[in-house]
Image 1 (cartoon, rainbow over the protein chains, first blue to last red):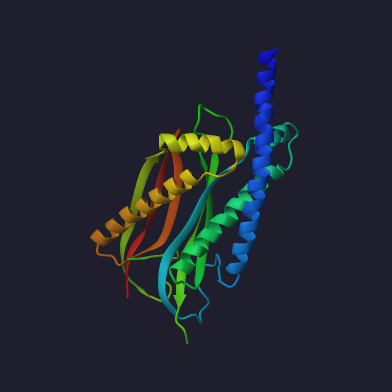
Image 2 (cartoon, helix red, strand yellow; image 1 turned 45 degrees about the vertical axis):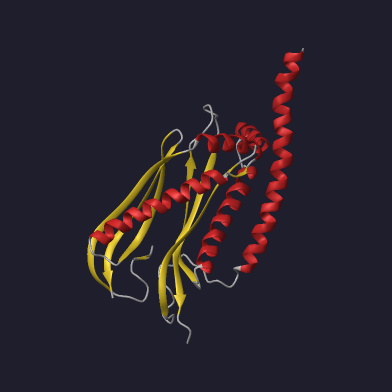
Length: 156
Length: 104
């Protein structure tokens, strides 16, 4: 009896914990992303390889931003359920969206901090990081890297 | 040393090519950090320990690449690319490569 309770109770507790903590963290993260994205609205950022011809470039540097994220226990459970019938896994979409936007922001923050005005040739890469604990199945984390060439423009 | 992931340094002409330069490092996760990340895996969100680890490692890979470029007499590395691969459970290789050049 007690054993059954523990066997049911622990995963249930983890589900609730994952859901509550996960949603709060996600909401806070989105809030901070929106605020910071507004701040960098005016920094030209492009994945084009060349700057516009009329730009007069003073200096150049490589900038990068990255983040490693993981899904919570609840979302992982949802995704597993989703795997039975197939289709869109919304729980993972928002995770990757957050990670990409965060990586881009960190890249822009680095560019701004070092005094650059624009970033060209922006590339986004994502890599799966191997599961860390006790052969824990499922994704342990995804690294998203954003990098590009930062330009400082000469003032006319 | 000028680094850029574009094919040329914007606003400057390439005078000479020195060939491909590379830098890499394999890092494994610190036990404590790994434990924390395991816990963090329950609630989701950013695994800060890993973010730090990987960006430090990438920095080092870039430094090694720059060392090579310097030894060749280059003053810039263009078309820099990164690659991350998890070699084994708990270890990742960070790799940076590009073309060493001399620009004006």
